[in-house]
Image (tube, rainbow, N blue to C red; front, top):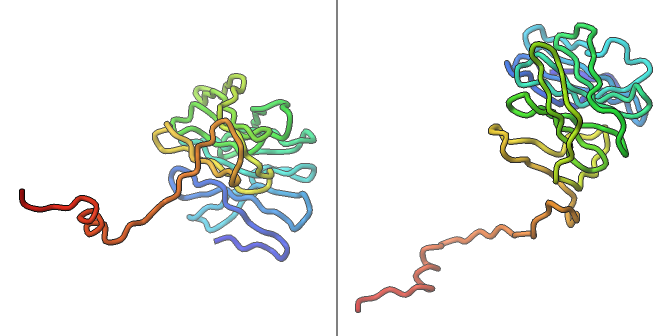
Length: 205
């Protein structure tokens, strides 16, 4: 759908709830310069979301469940922080995170739109958030999910189920984390009924 110029790669990050628009970011080679865009399937056009990206990089745009907000990461302060803006953009901008041990990145809305998650120093955090009548939010709360090693310019390595009850995470093999579970292999048994008859002989008594 999008056509990148030579030396530029496009990475999709989020679909709008109506599936008529998606957010993506453009990364230019090895230069630490990333721009955040949205693409309209109806108009077949891409639009730069942040008006003036000349001094900063923005990426990982995530639409809110109602499609009225876009959360993203930006390093305009000298390090990556998580921001939210109305969609379509009105010029209003809210900085959700401030500080932390490392960059704050890869935001994700909860299915009900009442929480915004993000990663800092390999740990997942949650921010209680309200978007009506205006955007307000609480202080971040660390969650017991750790072990992320992703860079700020790579794809998000976690997601949440539609019911909001479980997270799906991608962690490196052998990663020692507090939320890790023992490795359990998957085994496929063919002709299982024949195997069952050998294990539990049947006969008349």
